[in-house]
Image (cartoon, rainbow, N blue to C red; front, side):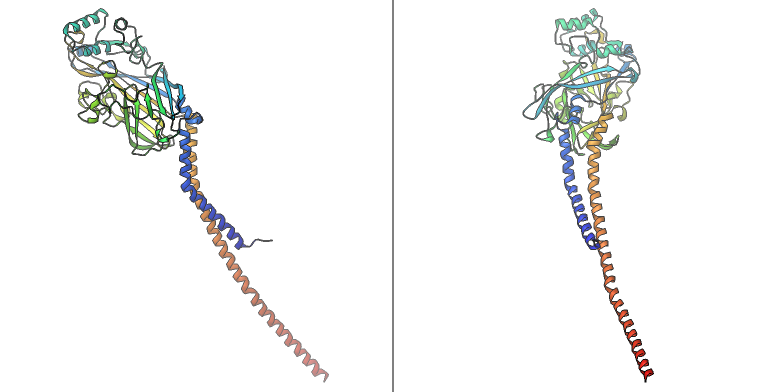
Amino acid sequence: MAVSKSTLAIVFLVLGGLTVLFGTVLVFVGPIIIDDQIVKNVEINPKNELSYTMWKDIPVPFFMSVYFFHIVNPDEILKGEKPMVIQRGPYVYSGKRWKDNITFHDNNTVSYKEFRQYFFEERMSVGDETDVVTIPNMLVLGASVMMENMPYPIRILLSTTFKTFNEGPFLTKSVGELMWGYDSKLVDFLNKYLPGMLPSTGKFGLFAEFNNSNTGQFTVFTGQDDIRKVHKVDSWNGLKNVDYWRSDQCNMINGTAGQMWPPFMTTESTLPFYSPDACRSMELVFQRPGVFRGIPVYRFVAPKTLFANGADYPPNEGFCPCRQSGLLNVSSCRHNSPVFISQPHFFEADPVLLETVNGLSPNEDDHGLFIDMHPETGVPMNVSIRLQLNLLIKSVSGISETGKITEVVMPMIWFEESGYIDGPVLKTFRTNLVVLPMVMEYMQYIFIGLGLATILGAVMLFFSDKKVRRKTSVSPTQGESVKDTKNDTTNETQDEKCNMNDTGKK
Protein backbone atom coordinates (compact mmCIF):
# COMPACT_ATOMS: atom_id res chain seq x y z
CA MET A 1 0.00 0.00 0.00
CA ALA A 2 1.51 3.36 -1.06
CA VAL A 3 2.15 5.97 1.64
CA SER A 4 0.65 9.37 0.91
CA LYS A 5 2.79 12.49 0.84
CA SER A 6 0.80 13.96 3.72
CA THR A 7 1.71 11.01 5.89
CA LEU A 8 5.39 11.35 4.93
CA ALA A 9 5.22 15.07 5.68
CA ILE A 10 3.88 14.38 9.16
CA VAL A 11 6.64 11.78 9.75
CA PHE A 12 9.36 14.21 8.59
CA LEU A 13 7.82 16.99 10.68
CA VAL A 14 7.97 14.83 13.81
CA LEU A 15 11.54 13.68 13.05
CA GLY A 16 12.66 17.26 12.37
CA GLY A 17 11.09 18.51 15.57
CA LEU A 18 12.78 15.76 17.58
CA THR A 19 16.14 16.55 15.92
CA VAL A 20 15.83 20.27 16.71
CA LEU A 21 14.83 19.39 20.26
CA PHE A 22 17.86 17.10 20.63
CA GLY A 23 20.20 19.78 19.28
CA THR A 24 18.68 22.39 21.58
CA VAL A 25 19.10 20.06 24.56
CA LEU A 26 22.77 19.58 23.57
CA VAL A 27 23.25 23.35 23.66
CA PHE A 28 22.45 23.31 27.36
CA VAL A 29 23.54 19.79 28.32
CA GLY A 30 26.65 19.58 26.10
CA PRO A 31 28.79 22.00 28.15
CA ILE A 32 27.75 20.19 31.32
CA ILE A 33 28.85 16.86 29.82
CA ILE A 34 32.14 18.36 28.64
CA ASP A 35 32.84 19.99 32.01
CA ASP A 36 32.00 16.74 33.80
CA GLN A 37 34.45 14.89 31.54
CA ILE A 38 37.15 17.48 32.27
CA VAL A 39 36.55 17.19 36.02
CA LYS A 40 36.92 13.41 35.86
CA ASN A 41 40.14 13.71 33.86
CA VAL A 42 41.95 16.38 35.87
CA GLU A 43 41.33 15.20 39.44
CA ILE A 44 44.26 13.30 40.96
CA ASN A 45 42.97 9.76 40.67
CA PRO A 46 44.93 6.63 39.67
CA LYS A 47 41.89 5.58 37.59
CA ASN A 48 42.51 8.56 35.27
CA GLU A 49 45.35 7.14 33.21
CA LEU A 50 46.09 10.28 31.17
CA SER A 51 46.14 12.97 33.85
CA TYR A 52 47.52 10.74 36.62
CA THR A 53 50.48 9.69 34.47
CA MET A 54 51.20 13.31 33.56
CA TRP A 55 51.04 14.24 37.24
CA LYS A 56 53.08 11.31 38.55
CA ASP A 57 55.85 10.83 36.00
CA ILE A 58 55.68 14.02 33.90
CA PRO A 59 56.29 12.22 30.56
CA VAL A 60 57.15 15.38 28.60
CA PRO A 61 60.45 16.87 27.38
CA PHE A 62 62.00 18.89 30.19
CA PHE A 63 65.24 20.88 30.05
CA MET A 64 67.34 23.21 32.17
CA SER A 65 69.49 25.70 30.26
CA VAL A 66 72.23 27.41 32.29
CA TYR A 67 74.02 30.64 31.37
CA PHE A 68 77.14 31.88 33.21
CA PHE A 69 78.18 35.51 33.53
CA HIS A 70 81.90 35.17 32.84
CA ILE A 71 83.85 38.01 34.52
CA VAL A 72 86.17 39.73 32.06
CA ASN A 73 87.96 42.13 34.46
CA PRO A 74 88.41 40.52 37.93
CA ASP A 75 91.58 42.51 38.73
CA GLU A 76 89.90 45.82 37.85
CA ILE A 77 86.90 44.94 40.04
CA LEU A 78 89.25 44.57 43.01
CA LYS A 79 90.43 48.10 42.29
CA GLY A 80 86.90 49.48 42.45
CA GLU A 81 86.05 49.52 38.75
CA LYS A 82 82.69 48.49 37.29
CA PRO A 83 82.35 44.75 36.60
CA MET A 84 82.18 43.62 33.00
CA VAL A 85 80.63 40.26 32.12
CA ILE A 86 80.07 38.11 29.04
CA GLN A 87 77.25 35.60 28.90
CA ARG A 88 78.41 32.03 28.30
CA GLY A 89 75.93 29.33 27.43
CA PRO A 90 73.55 27.74 27.24
CA TYR A 91 74.75 24.57 28.91
CA VAL A 92 71.69 22.36 28.57
CA TYR A 93 70.59 19.52 30.84
CA SER A 94 67.67 17.20 30.23
CA GLY A 95 65.65 16.77 33.37
CA LYS A 96 63.78 13.82 34.73
CA ARG A 97 61.15 14.36 37.42
CA TRP A 98 58.95 11.83 39.12
CA LYS A 99 56.86 11.51 42.25
CA ASP A 100 57.45 8.83 44.86
CA ASN A 101 56.16 7.91 48.32
CA ILE A 102 52.65 8.71 47.05
CA THR A 103 50.07 8.35 49.82
CA PHE A 104 46.36 9.13 49.52
CA HIS A 105 44.53 10.37 52.63
CA ASP A 106 40.90 10.21 53.74
CA ASN A 107 40.48 14.02 53.56
CA ASN A 108 40.91 14.01 49.76
CA THR A 109 44.59 14.93 49.83
CA VAL A 110 47.67 13.10 48.62
CA SER A 111 51.28 13.34 49.87
CA TYR A 112 54.38 12.78 47.77
CA LYS A 113 58.01 13.70 47.26
CA GLU A 114 59.16 14.81 43.84
CA PHE A 115 62.64 13.77 42.81
CA ARG A 116 64.78 15.26 40.05
CA GLN A 117 67.84 14.32 38.04
CA TYR A 118 69.76 16.21 35.39
CA PHE A 119 71.80 14.87 32.45
CA PHE A 120 74.12 17.00 30.34
CA GLU A 121 73.06 17.36 26.68
CA GLU A 122 76.17 18.32 24.73
CA ARG A 123 74.36 18.36 21.35
CA MET A 124 72.05 21.12 22.64
CA SER A 125 74.79 23.13 24.38
CA VAL A 126 77.27 25.68 23.07
CA GLY A 127 80.18 23.83 24.60
CA ASP A 128 81.18 21.16 27.07
CA GLU A 129 81.13 20.99 30.86
CA THR A 130 84.93 21.30 30.70
CA ASP A 131 84.57 24.93 29.52
CA VAL A 132 86.21 27.31 32.01
CA VAL A 133 84.51 30.45 33.33
CA THR A 134 85.19 33.01 36.06
CA ILE A 135 82.55 33.98 38.64
CA PRO A 136 82.58 35.44 42.18
CA ASN A 137 83.73 33.05 44.91
CA MET A 138 80.67 32.76 47.16
CA LEU A 139 82.75 31.24 49.96
CA VAL A 140 84.95 34.33 50.14
CA LEU A 141 82.89 37.31 48.99
CA GLY A 142 79.63 35.98 50.44
CA ALA A 143 81.19 35.15 53.80
CA SER A 144 82.88 38.57 53.88
CA VAL A 145 79.54 40.38 53.62
CA MET A 146 78.06 38.07 56.25
CA MET A 147 80.94 38.93 58.63
CA GLU A 148 81.18 42.69 58.01
CA ASN A 149 79.52 43.53 61.34
CA MET A 150 81.65 41.12 63.36
CA PRO A 151 84.54 42.44 65.51
CA TYR A 152 87.60 43.47 63.53
CA PRO A 153 89.85 40.67 64.94
CA ILE A 154 87.37 38.06 63.70
CA ARG A 155 87.43 39.58 60.23
CA ILE A 156 91.23 39.46 60.28
CA LEU A 157 91.05 35.81 61.34
CA LEU A 158 88.62 35.07 58.48
CA SER A 159 90.95 36.67 55.96
CA THR A 160 93.85 34.61 57.35
CA THR A 161 91.74 31.47 56.93
CA PHE A 162 91.09 32.32 53.27
CA LYS A 163 94.80 32.70 52.68
CA THR A 164 95.57 29.46 54.48
CA PHE A 165 93.30 27.52 52.15
CA ASN A 166 94.34 29.54 49.08
CA GLU A 167 90.85 30.91 48.46
CA GLY A 168 90.65 34.07 46.37
CA PRO A 169 87.73 36.44 45.60
CA PHE A 170 87.01 34.88 42.20
CA LEU A 171 86.74 31.31 40.96
CA THR A 172 88.00 30.15 37.58
CA LYS A 173 86.76 26.61 37.15
CA SER A 174 84.98 24.34 34.71
CA VAL A 175 81.23 24.53 34.17
CA GLY A 176 80.81 21.01 35.55
CA GLU A 177 82.66 21.85 38.77
CA LEU A 178 80.75 25.07 39.33
CA MET A 179 77.46 23.32 38.68
CA TRP A 180 77.78 20.08 40.59
CA GLY A 181 80.60 20.72 43.02
CA TYR A 182 84.37 20.85 43.39
CA ASP A 183 86.81 19.80 46.09
CA SER A 184 87.73 22.54 48.54
CA LYS A 185 89.83 22.21 51.66
CA LEU A 186 88.02 25.25 53.07
CA VAL A 187 84.66 23.49 52.60
CA ASP A 188 85.99 20.38 54.32
CA PHE A 189 87.29 22.53 57.20
CA LEU A 190 83.98 24.38 57.64
CA ASN A 191 81.92 21.19 57.50
CA LYS A 192 84.17 19.64 60.15
CA TYR A 193 84.39 22.50 62.62
CA LEU A 194 81.29 24.56 61.77
CA PRO A 195 78.70 21.96 60.69
CA GLY A 196 75.53 23.38 59.19
CA MET A 197 77.14 26.58 57.97
CA LEU A 198 77.12 25.40 54.36
CA PRO A 199 74.10 24.01 52.47
CA SER A 200 75.86 20.74 51.58
CA THR A 201 78.26 18.43 53.36
CA GLY A 202 80.02 17.23 50.21
CA LYS A 203 81.47 19.15 47.30
CA PHE A 204 80.53 22.82 46.98
CA GLY A 205 78.62 23.73 43.78
CA LEU A 206 75.82 26.05 42.72
CA PHE A 207 73.47 23.14 41.93
CA ALA A 208 75.02 20.49 44.15
CA GLU A 209 71.91 20.26 46.32
CA PHE A 210 69.54 20.11 43.32
CA ASN A 211 70.67 16.99 41.47
CA ASN A 212 69.41 13.63 42.72
CA SER A 213 67.32 15.38 45.34
CA ASN A 214 63.69 16.09 46.13
CA THR A 215 61.74 19.29 46.75
CA GLY A 216 60.36 18.18 50.11
CA GLN A 217 57.08 16.51 50.99
CA PHE A 218 54.05 18.15 49.44
CA THR A 219 50.48 17.38 50.48
CA VAL A 220 47.99 18.60 47.89
CA PHE A 221 44.25 18.30 47.33
CA THR A 222 43.09 15.65 44.85
CA GLY A 223 40.00 17.59 43.78
CA GLN A 224 37.76 14.55 44.19
CA ASP A 225 35.42 16.45 46.52
CA ASP A 226 35.95 19.94 45.06
CA ILE A 227 37.64 20.37 41.68
CA ARG A 228 38.36 24.02 42.51
CA LYS A 229 40.96 22.81 45.04
CA VAL A 230 42.75 20.25 42.86
CA HIS A 231 46.58 20.50 43.04
CA LYS A 232 46.42 23.23 45.70
CA VAL A 233 48.96 22.77 48.50
CA ASP A 234 47.60 21.74 51.88
CA SER A 235 51.06 21.58 53.49
CA TRP A 236 54.77 21.41 52.67
CA ASN A 237 57.01 19.34 54.92
CA GLY A 238 54.08 19.35 57.33
CA LEU A 239 53.93 23.17 57.40
CA LYS A 240 50.95 25.35 56.57
CA ASN A 241 53.23 28.42 56.57
CA VAL A 242 56.99 29.01 56.44
CA ASP A 243 58.97 31.24 58.80
CA TYR A 244 61.57 32.75 56.47
CA TRP A 245 59.93 36.16 56.14
CA ARG A 246 58.79 39.08 58.29
CA SER A 247 55.01 39.02 57.70
CA ASP A 248 52.27 36.41 57.91
CA GLN A 249 51.21 37.18 54.36
CA CYS A 250 54.69 36.59 52.94
CA ASN A 251 55.03 33.35 54.92
CA MET A 252 51.82 31.89 53.49
CA ILE A 253 52.00 28.76 51.33
CA ASN A 254 49.60 29.62 48.52
CA GLY A 255 48.49 27.97 45.31
CA THR A 256 49.69 24.70 43.82
CA ALA A 257 53.08 22.98 43.66
CA GLY A 258 53.71 24.71 40.33
CA GLN A 259 52.92 21.96 37.81
CA MET A 260 49.12 21.95 37.33
CA TRP A 261 46.29 24.22 38.40
CA PRO A 262 42.49 23.93 38.83
CA PRO A 263 40.49 23.92 35.56
CA PHE A 264 38.04 26.41 34.06
CA MET A 265 40.32 29.46 34.06
CA THR A 266 39.31 32.90 32.84
CA THR A 267 41.30 35.97 31.90
CA GLU A 268 40.82 37.11 35.51
CA SER A 269 42.49 33.98 36.89
CA THR A 270 46.03 33.95 38.32
CA LEU A 271 48.59 31.16 38.78
CA PRO A 272 49.68 31.08 42.44
CA PHE A 273 52.26 28.44 43.42
CA TYR A 274 54.77 27.67 46.16
CA SER A 275 58.45 27.33 45.17
CA PRO A 276 60.73 25.55 47.69
CA ASP A 277 63.77 26.82 45.75
CA ALA A 278 62.66 30.45 46.16
CA CYS A 279 61.35 29.72 49.69
CA ARG A 280 58.11 31.59 48.98
CA SER A 281 54.80 31.62 47.14
CA MET A 282 54.63 33.44 43.82
CA GLU A 283 51.80 34.37 41.47
CA LEU A 284 51.66 34.84 37.71
CA VAL A 285 49.03 36.93 35.90
CA PHE A 286 47.21 36.66 32.56
CA GLN A 287 48.89 38.42 29.65
CA ARG A 288 47.19 37.30 26.42
CA PRO A 289 45.42 34.40 24.70
CA GLY A 290 47.25 32.27 22.15
CA VAL A 291 47.54 28.89 20.44
CA PHE A 292 50.12 26.17 21.10
CA ARG A 293 50.25 23.42 18.46
CA GLY A 294 46.59 23.72 17.68
CA ILE A 295 45.46 24.01 21.30
CA PRO A 296 44.05 27.30 22.68
CA VAL A 297 46.08 28.62 25.61
CA TYR A 298 46.31 31.55 27.98
CA ARG A 299 49.77 33.00 28.58
CA PHE A 300 50.59 33.91 32.18
CA VAL A 301 53.66 35.98 33.09
CA ALA A 302 55.34 37.47 36.14
CA PRO A 303 53.84 40.81 37.19
CA LYS A 304 56.21 43.71 37.77
CA THR A 305 55.30 43.54 41.45
CA LEU A 306 56.68 39.99 41.84
CA PHE A 307 60.13 41.11 43.00
CA ALA A 308 59.29 44.75 43.75
CA ASN A 309 60.61 46.11 47.03
CA GLY A 310 58.42 47.21 49.92
CA ALA A 311 58.60 50.89 48.97
CA ASP A 312 57.22 50.28 45.48
CA TYR A 313 54.78 47.54 46.55
CA PRO A 314 53.89 47.57 50.29
CA PRO A 315 52.68 43.92 50.46
CA ASN A 316 56.28 42.88 49.72
CA GLU A 317 57.59 44.67 52.81
CA GLY A 318 57.70 41.30 54.55
CA PHE A 319 60.39 40.09 52.12
CA CYS A 320 62.74 42.87 53.19
CA PRO A 321 65.41 44.00 54.00
CA CYS A 322 65.12 45.05 50.38
CA ARG A 323 67.33 46.69 47.83
CA GLN A 324 66.18 47.93 44.44
CA SER A 325 62.95 46.60 42.96
CA GLY A 326 63.53 43.49 40.88
CA LEU A 327 65.56 41.69 43.56
CA LEU A 328 64.36 39.09 46.06
CA ASN A 329 66.57 38.75 49.12
CA VAL A 330 66.70 35.00 49.87
CA SER A 331 69.44 35.19 52.49
CA SER A 332 66.97 34.19 55.20
CA CYS A 333 66.54 30.75 53.62
CA ARG A 334 70.09 30.43 52.28
CA HIS A 335 72.12 30.32 55.49
CA ASN A 336 72.19 34.15 55.60
CA SER A 337 74.36 34.27 52.49
CA PRO A 338 73.81 37.61 50.64
CA VAL A 339 72.08 35.93 47.70
CA PHE A 340 69.39 37.61 45.57
CA ILE A 341 67.02 36.20 42.96
CA SER A 342 65.89 38.25 39.97
CA GLN A 343 64.75 37.82 36.42
CA PRO A 344 67.63 37.31 33.92
CA HIS A 345 69.70 40.36 33.04
CA PHE A 346 67.66 42.29 35.65
CA PHE A 347 64.63 42.23 33.33
CA GLU A 348 61.87 44.53 34.70
CA ALA A 349 64.12 45.53 37.61
CA ASP A 350 65.20 49.00 38.71
CA PRO A 351 67.30 50.44 35.82
CA VAL A 352 70.02 51.43 38.29
CA LEU A 353 71.00 47.75 38.53
CA LEU A 354 71.96 47.75 34.84
CA GLU A 355 74.19 50.77 35.41
CA THR A 356 76.35 48.91 37.92
CA VAL A 357 77.39 46.06 35.57
CA ASN A 358 78.49 46.14 31.94
CA GLY A 359 77.37 43.40 29.56
CA LEU A 360 73.65 43.05 30.37
CA SER A 361 70.81 43.55 27.86
CA PRO A 362 67.38 42.43 29.11
CA ASN A 363 64.42 41.73 26.81
CA GLU A 364 61.12 39.93 27.26
CA ASP A 365 61.59 37.27 24.56
CA ASP A 366 64.85 35.98 26.02
CA HIS A 367 64.46 36.75 29.71
CA GLY A 368 60.77 36.94 30.61
CA LEU A 369 59.23 33.88 32.27
CA PHE A 370 55.85 32.51 31.14
CA ILE A 371 53.44 29.58 31.33
CA ASP A 372 51.04 28.77 28.48
CA MET A 373 47.98 27.16 30.06
CA HIS A 374 45.08 25.24 28.55
CA PRO A 375 42.43 27.19 30.48
CA GLU A 376 39.72 24.52 30.43
CA THR A 377 41.88 21.87 32.13
CA GLY A 378 44.53 23.84 34.04
CA VAL A 379 47.31 21.85 32.34
CA PRO A 380 50.47 23.77 31.24
CA MET A 381 51.21 23.21 27.56
CA ASN A 382 54.45 25.21 27.32
CA VAL A 383 56.55 26.45 30.25
CA SER A 384 59.63 28.62 30.57
CA ILE A 385 60.67 29.63 34.09
CA ARG A 386 63.73 31.90 34.04
CA LEU A 387 65.56 33.11 37.13
CA GLN A 388 68.93 34.66 37.90
CA LEU A 389 71.20 34.09 40.89
CA ASN A 390 73.06 37.17 42.16
CA LEU A 391 75.58 37.79 44.94
CA LEU A 392 76.05 41.04 46.86
CA ILE A 393 79.77 41.86 46.86
CA LYS A 394 81.67 44.81 48.38
CA SER A 395 84.84 45.79 50.18
CA VAL A 396 84.91 44.72 53.84
CA SER A 397 87.44 46.22 56.20
CA GLY A 398 89.89 43.66 57.58
CA ILE A 399 89.32 41.16 54.78
CA SER A 400 91.99 41.94 52.22
CA GLU A 401 90.50 39.53 49.66
CA THR A 402 87.69 42.04 49.04
CA GLY A 403 90.15 44.75 47.98
CA LYS A 404 88.37 47.98 46.99
CA ILE A 405 85.32 46.31 45.44
CA THR A 406 82.50 48.79 44.89
CA GLU A 407 79.23 47.54 46.39
CA VAL A 408 77.26 45.81 43.63
CA VAL A 409 74.70 43.04 43.20
CA MET A 410 76.74 40.80 40.94
CA PRO A 411 74.99 38.43 38.51
CA MET A 412 76.54 34.96 38.52
CA ILE A 413 74.28 32.67 36.49
CA TRP A 414 70.76 32.52 35.14
CA PHE A 415 68.85 29.41 34.23
CA GLU A 416 65.73 28.47 32.33
CA GLU A 417 63.61 25.45 33.23
CA SER A 418 61.42 24.66 30.23
CA GLY A 419 59.04 21.92 29.20
CA TYR A 420 56.26 21.36 26.71
CA ILE A 421 53.70 18.68 25.93
CA ASP A 422 54.55 16.78 22.76
CA GLY A 423 54.27 13.40 21.01
CA PRO A 424 51.66 10.80 22.03
CA VAL A 425 50.75 12.74 25.16
CA LEU A 426 49.93 15.83 23.07
CA LYS A 427 47.89 13.73 20.61
CA THR A 428 45.89 12.07 23.40
CA PHE A 429 45.39 15.39 25.16
CA ARG A 430 44.17 17.09 22.00
CA THR A 431 41.81 14.20 21.17
CA ASN A 432 40.24 13.80 24.62
CA LEU A 433 40.12 17.36 25.83
CA VAL A 434 40.04 19.51 22.70
CA VAL A 435 38.76 17.62 19.64
CA LEU A 436 35.96 15.65 21.29
CA PRO A 437 34.49 18.68 23.11
CA MET A 438 34.74 20.63 19.85
CA VAL A 439 32.93 17.86 17.95
CA MET A 440 30.20 17.81 20.57
CA GLU A 441 29.84 21.58 20.29
CA TYR A 442 29.54 21.38 16.50
CA MET A 443 27.12 18.45 16.70
CA GLN A 444 24.54 20.50 18.55
CA TYR A 445 24.41 23.03 15.71
CA ILE A 446 24.40 20.26 13.09
CA PHE A 447 21.39 18.64 14.75
CA ILE A 448 19.53 21.94 14.95
CA GLY A 449 20.31 22.74 11.30
CA LEU A 450 19.38 19.25 10.14
CA GLY A 451 16.14 19.35 12.14
CA LEU A 452 15.13 22.72 10.69
CA ALA A 453 15.90 21.49 7.17
CA THR A 454 13.78 18.39 7.76
CA ILE A 455 10.88 20.50 9.07
CA LEU A 456 11.14 22.79 6.03
CA GLY A 457 11.12 19.75 3.74
CA ALA A 458 8.06 18.36 5.52
CA VAL A 459 6.17 21.65 5.08
CA MET A 460 7.04 21.77 1.37
CA LEU A 461 5.99 18.15 0.94
CA PHE A 462 2.69 18.79 2.74
CA PHE A 463 1.75 21.78 0.58
CA SER A 464 2.87 19.95 -2.57
CA ASP A 465 0.54 17.06 -1.74
CA LYS A 466 -2.31 19.47 -0.97
CA LYS A 467 -1.90 21.13 -4.37
CA VAL A 468 -1.97 17.79 -6.16
CA ARG A 469 -5.14 16.78 -4.30
CA ARG A 470 -6.82 20.04 -5.33
CA LYS A 471 -6.06 19.34 -9.00
CA THR A 472 -7.24 15.79 -8.63
CA SER A 473 -10.57 16.90 -7.11
CA VAL A 474 -11.23 19.27 -10.09
CA SER A 475 -10.38 16.93 -13.06
CA PRO A 476 -13.15 14.23 -12.60
CA THR A 477 -16.04 16.87 -12.77
CA GLN A 478 -14.77 18.15 -16.07
CA GLY A 479 -14.59 14.59 -17.36
CA GLU A 480 -18.16 13.85 -16.40
CA SER A 481 -19.40 16.96 -18.28
CA VAL A 482 -17.66 15.88 -21.45
CA LYS A 483 -19.02 12.37 -21.10
CA ASP A 484 -22.61 13.68 -20.66
CA THR A 485 -22.26 15.88 -23.74
CA LYS A 486 -21.10 12.94 -25.79
CA ASN A 487 -24.01 10.83 -24.57
CA ASP A 488 -26.50 13.57 -25.47
CA THR A 489 -25.05 13.88 -28.96
CA THR A 490 -25.19 10.14 -29.47
CA ASN A 491 -28.79 9.98 -28.32
CA GLU A 492 -29.75 12.85 -30.68
CA THR A 493 -28.11 11.06 -33.60
CA GLN A 494 -29.89 7.82 -32.82
CA ASP A 495 -33.25 9.68 -32.61
CA GLU A 496 -32.64 11.25 -36.02
CA LYS A 497 -31.88 7.81 -37.49
CA CYS A 498 -35.09 6.43 -36.07
CA ASN A 499 -37.11 9.29 -37.56
CA MET A 500 -35.56 8.73 -40.99
CA ASN A 501 -36.38 5.03 -40.88
CA ASP A 502 -39.97 5.78 -39.99
CA THR A 503 -40.23 8.21 -42.94
CA GLY A 504 -38.87 5.62 -45.36
CA LYS A 505 -41.37 3.06 -44.28
CA LYS A 506 -44.23 5.40 -44.92
